[in-house]
Structures are given as C-alpha cells and as structure tokens.
Image (cartoon, rainbow, N blue to C red):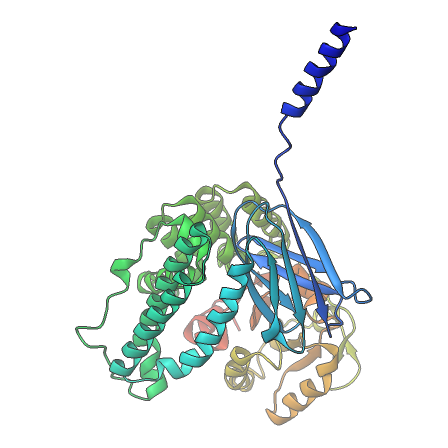
Length: 459
C-alpha cells in the first residue's frame, strides 16, 4: 500500500513539474460602438489581414500568430489607429467610432497604444501637415522639426513604455526627423515658388546618418523605408540612360547598393510586382529578379505573374475583348477592329488618372497626324460602372478622337487582367493580324521613341 501511495506521489510530482506549453499566439479583440462595417483591416510589415466584425454584438476577436513583434495599424473604415503587437501578449481595444479620441487599450501593451494617441495629437498641434511644414523658410523649418523631435522623444521616455519598444521608437522618431530633412530641399522650391532655392551649408546632412543595410530599422520604421526607397530611386534616375528601362535599372541598383537580405528582398519584391508588368524585356527582368532574390515566397509570386505575362509578350496573339460599350454607339469587340490592314494603338486609361490626362492632348495630336495612315487609335476606359457619365463627359469636353470604349468590368475585365495592368496609362501596340507588337508601347509623351516605332512598322 505504501508503495502505491509513494508511486502516486512521485507521479503527481512529475506531472506538476511538466512545463506548460509556451503561448505562441496573441488575441486581438475589442468592442466598437457606432461602427457598421463587416471587416477591420490589420496591417504590418509583410502582414495584411481582415478581421471580421460582429455588428450585432459590436465586437471583434481574432487569434493571431505573428513572426515578430512590431508596428501595426488597425483601420476601422476611414479611421486608422497605430498599435504595437508582440507575439504572445493580448490586446483589447475599446472604441466609439464617433468619438475616436476616447479610445482605450487593455493589455500588456496598452501604454503603447495610449502613447500613439498622444503622439498623433502632438503631430496635429505642432506640425499640422507636411505641406505646411515643408513650405516654411529654412530657419523656421529647422526650429519646428527640432522642437517636435525633442518633445516627441520626451513624450516617449515619460510614457512608461516597455524598454524593448522604447528603443525602437526612439530610432523611429529620429528617422521621422531625418525624413523631414530629406524632403525639405526636394519640396521647398516647388512649394515656395523659389525654384532656385538651395539649402544652406549648415543644413543638417541626412545620408551620412542612413545605413542602407539595417534590416531591423527597415522592418520597424516606415520613415526609414521612405528615405531608403526614394534615395535608391534617385540613384536609379542618375544611372538611367536615355530611353532606358527604369524598372530594370532600379532592380539592378538595389542589387549593387543593398546587402541586407531583409531590405533587399522587400525592396525587390515591392517594386517587381508592378515593375515586371512594365518591363521592356520581360525575360531579362524575370531572370535578374530570380538571380537577385533569396525569398522563396516572393520568387513564387513573381513567377506566377511572369507566367501570366508570357501570354501577352511580343508576338503572342492579343487577348480578346468583347462587346465593350462604344461612345459612338453600339458595342465593339477586338475582332471588329482587326482585318482592316491597320495597326492598333490601344490606350488604357481612366477619368481619375492624372497621368492619363497629361497624355490626352498629345494623343489627340497623334490621331490628327496619322488619321489617314494604317493605324487605328483605340482608348479603353477602366472607370467603374458608376463613372460612365463622367467618361462620356470627359470625351466630349476634351474632344477626344479615335475609338472610345468602356471596359465591361473595370480592372476586373478579362482583357485588362490578362495584361496584368496595374498602373495607368498603359499603351499596347497590336499588328493588323491581331498579334502583340508591344504590351508596353511608348506613350505619346515619349515623343521620338514612339514615332520611331511607327516608322519601323511602316506606319
């Protein structure tokens, strides 16, 4: 009997000594008054998720597994709140959508959420908006950004924040200051009307304080990412030869200027998703991306886009569109435009696109110049259905010529999706037999480059 009791005691001791499983998730929850949407958007570095909102119970709850502690934003319709999430610490939010200043946070990181609210108010009180800030004369600008940086640093230090977060936030405040300094000589000339303006010799330097290879700072600071991205684009433009491919050159610049794998992979991927759709040489662009990237998920995604774009590469049959509404009346399909011995110069645009509007007068001039040649000018609007009247008004007001068509499902139209069109305007050149000459033809504003293409084709 004693042996049984002893064994039972030993067993109990062994069981009690077993380690509890380590919590590897967090619960994000909250209650929201006066909010009637179905979803809440949670975003962070390489993270994007919609959280369901129970409109009847007026609350939400989601169990999350995140790879790293970090900065996130939670968007309720048009209201965005910054939060900080750690891998295994829950956070609860209490909010009245009509009274956002009264937001409350519960949980280990509640103090961080409260700090973010105070930070936002300090920005509104001291800065207002970047345009006004960057319009100030140099001395006034420097006085304001230096005071804001000092006051914000004091706020962070006095807010009883977790030490690990405070270290990141102090860096983030520094990068916001550097971002403002970086923007000033770039935007002040245009905002002030003084196009000859140059900052003084004593103006603080920015680039000697920026390391292109800080993966930790890249993940934690949007301001750091902004400076780095814009500087790499500037270097790219300086390298770009006449008629060169910006997207390919930008990718090559990242390869030569950046060594950190986190920074390099994200920069490559974030630009390549659109860049590959604009690449002048699809094969070359894809091969270089694959040789530069070391992120398998990124490579798989770009490969998917590449395989889709191969179907609309030079020499491939142009995807068909059917029964697009014609401004002149009736419906028009691609087949209606082929078989007439004419090349098709297709402009994909929208009434809300400012860059499209800049091309309109140049496109009209081209149409007049080539009206009796073997080419047809076709414009396809990807405006939403509820903007059809605006489409018609724009054509009438700007006296736009050529064949004016309205895509059936905006960017969801099969024709648009097959060309992977993500940016406007987009110009496509098709030969009289319906084969693609260029899925990314020069724009009218490219001038001689487009005229040379026409001449080479015998137009």
